[in-house]
Length: 448
Image (cartoon, rainbow, N blue to C red):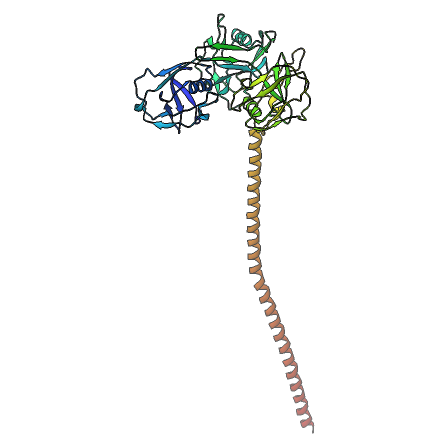
């Protein structure tokens, strides 16, 4: 698994309790307590997907970390990652006490299409998959109840929406007395390995539970109160699943969002939540169509660094006097490709909604491989033809050089022989005439 600057983990405890380590300058380093405050602790627990801060203190471990430590973080408390806070500095670990933190262990989860879809959990600052291994009806019923989606309707295996996404959870097996997924026994939270890419859990619930307008979970702790609403988002009417009219899944239907006060910061949060990269534009009065249902969400106001749209200020009143808001994200994905990555089921009263997002390559790797192979073969063929052409030209050139002198010699010899024969003939004739005339003169003298 590749690590990135600002990644965090806890060691020496549980998934949401332990000594804080941050990936800083190509290495994991402990964090010192000296500059730490509630703001930094809140960001850390949020990044881990562990809810709110219970407490932070000096590490009980007296073992000195073998690497350099880090200090100097300064956060406002609203950042999504420690990497968004002011930059820290490496120091010697012996210069101060090391940080130990305890979070509430709240971890977000969702079904990608409202009350059906792939089960995903939010951990360590990103959404990841849940493997299908050993997951039974009891476990899925816990998920449906916790999401206010009724009971289990169907349990399947499916492909991950994002092929590069981590598999945060595996071998989940809930018991009858477990009231939420976090209470169920499972493999440790972290990078797990499903049997194959088709072993991601896909759940369909009956949707006869409490309305999704009700907040999902609220947890009160001495330092902070953290509530979570679970809204699935999608972009409709655009080119692909990363551009179009913004819709929110509410009361078992998809509703639009009012474009009042809609801006690029709001669009940035939407694109981040959908896994569509950065926002290119926040579209108002868009031509993506009016959509179906009422305009439910209004006056959304985000800072731009929120992880989810529901973390922004908003109004939940129905509206009829505004246009739907639209978003265009940097990633471009084909809806036909998206529809094949998950199972879709049409339920009574509405069509199966599209998944909020999917990361699929625009061209399958096999097609790229075949095209590359054909291009390589064509190049080899051209080189062979070029080489054969050069060889043929050399052969023709050598042949001409060998045959041309012989023809010249033959012509010269022919001309020379012809001239000698002609000259000899002429000289013979003259000699014959002289001899003949001489004979006549002798005869004349004898006769006389």
